[in-house]
Image (cartoon, rainbow, N blue to C red; front, side, top):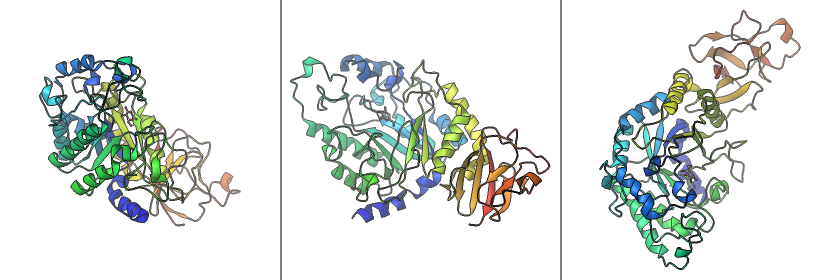
Length: 438
Ligand code: GLC
């Protein structure tokens, strides 16, 4: 059974692991207060008060075609939109609730439009779906770890029927998987304390998911979270352990392995500033250079990067995010061969940057300027043709006089007539492709 789970997972995740780079989109009515998607919980906002935001959600600038073109330009191969976040507001026309975008002034099925636009650009599509739902009477309130009313005495003795909640939640998953065409990915979020595994009726849910869309890949949060990956890391993963692990706001120091030392699929989810949902005052954006290096880091450890944008209430991706993604796209245009289909190298991390690898093609990502030649440790006699990935400029192995004492290594200069590797041709990350034998 366990091996079967792993075998099917390996098969399903092939396209996904080759893609390496995706776009996460957190969008909902929380973009109006503009203090992040957890605002209802953080500020303990009562339901009636929070739901008034729906009345002004007009999404007037929503143009998913524009988003899709941006994602494509940045080199992203898949995209995941929040169909529903913890606040319970549905960005689609769910027949099980009135708290949805089609009842807001925008009157649009935002999910459907997203799916159509991204598919049109050849980008694979996924939906984020919150297992937690603060809008439902039947979800635990008082005493729950996160519910906005968790310490409100008025809710202490309130009765609720959690099983009824589960039926609602399962029904919504079913409608997304039935009425919205081919979905590549489902991103469930998240489990905590006792709220995990069979508390969600996970086996039944996953059975339905796989029946409706057998190819679909899912994350590991029916069982886990960023705090605990769940049984995907064991040798005996459950059927709902998920197809990939989902470390959040960090890159695993050495990639992710199961208990037997085998690599497991993983995807780091990272925000571009500090928030997932739109936050008007958060200007703490990462530089394009940092994003590029983070993507390379993930690939060099056999992982994916899903990078988040948080559109504002009108449906615009913040200008800063657009600028960063366009610059990442500028680098990807030249260097994508060192990302797609690549993974960890057989060589350890070098001092000046990172390696990624695809078969016998080794990609040296040089990120730090060097005094003298760039060293390929232990690679003497193993390096064939070397080319700057960007424009196929020849890079030659060097036997400069001052390298003679270090014959077990191979060395190169970017310019064979120079004796220095300073400054770097691309200070963000200069990539050399090399044909190697091991
Ligand atoms: C979380 C958060 C959240 C965000 C997400 C993305 O655990 O609850 O708001 O959607 O993870 O990974």
